[in-house]
Amino acid sequence: MLQQPAIAIRHLNHAFGKGDLRKSVLHDVNLEIYPGEIVLLTGPSGSGKTTLLSLIGGLRSVQEGSLKVLGQELLGASKKQLVQIRTQIGFIFQEHHLLSCLSAEQNVRMSLRLHDDISMEERTERTVSMLKAVGLGDRMDYYPNNLSGGQKQRVAIARALVSHPKLVLADEPTASLDSKSGRDVVEIIRRLAKEQGCTILLVTHDNRILDIADRIVHMEDGRLAQDMALGNEGEEIKFQAETLINSGRSVRA
Ligand SMILES: Nc1ncnc2c1ncn2[C@@H]1O[C@H](COP(=O)(O)OP(=O)(O)OP(=O)(O)O)[C@@H](O)[C@H]1O
Image (cartoon, rainbow, N blue to C red; front, side, top):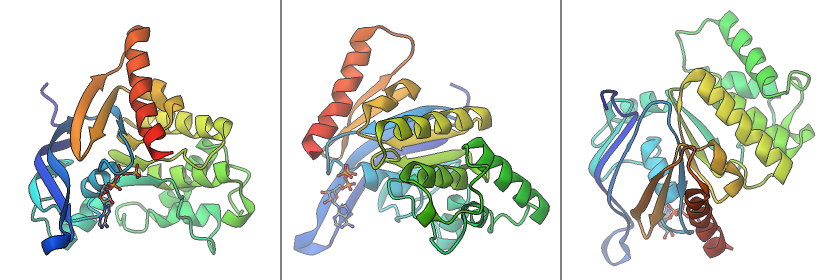
């Protein structure tokens, strides 16, 4: 493949704690994800998915191995470089982390504050059109407390995508949603990501998401245990993929 990977990971190890309390949680992780790919990260509770996602997002420092995100090496990166890489990534979490004192519009607009290259006028335009794209054109002045769970998660998606990031990292974005809202949220992420051509890495235990993915990467005990491409293949692969997602869910339950 000629394209540069959006994420390139080589021999990545990670541990928490020191001395006797040191616990190794990622072991020799190797992974490449290419621009435009939608990849699901699955695995049992405690297998290291969130740790891996937070390293890729520049939310933790890389300890050992190589981790390149959008061409930038994060091993040894300065705080300033980590902040810079974070501005190029859209984050969507299970808990939406909206600021309750700000309206939906202000929450979305906030994520453009570090983008000095985008004029005030364009920030307003983008914010309004992104909230319309997630179906909240008539809720822009609402505060989070007056929105449903699914609506709050849609504001969080708008906030993650309004800067047109090249990479979106999502950690169980549908976990707190009912089945219809969960499906809507996933469909919105997929549509907007394909329109904007961005790469998505999504941690999930939710097999309703399966059909939006190009690939499933499965973790066990801090290692990548399986990497499966999905396409228009038959029921057998689909069954295997569902089993992987369910294995994570049943262990967690
Ligand atoms: N800040 C931390 N300090 C110490 N140990 C941690 C910390 N964060 C995670 N761990 C440990 O690292 C391991 C991997 O955790 P991680 O949250 O990455 O797993 P996960 O696959 O995302 O799990 P889940 O599906 O439950 O969210 C677990 O054993 C966890 O207890």
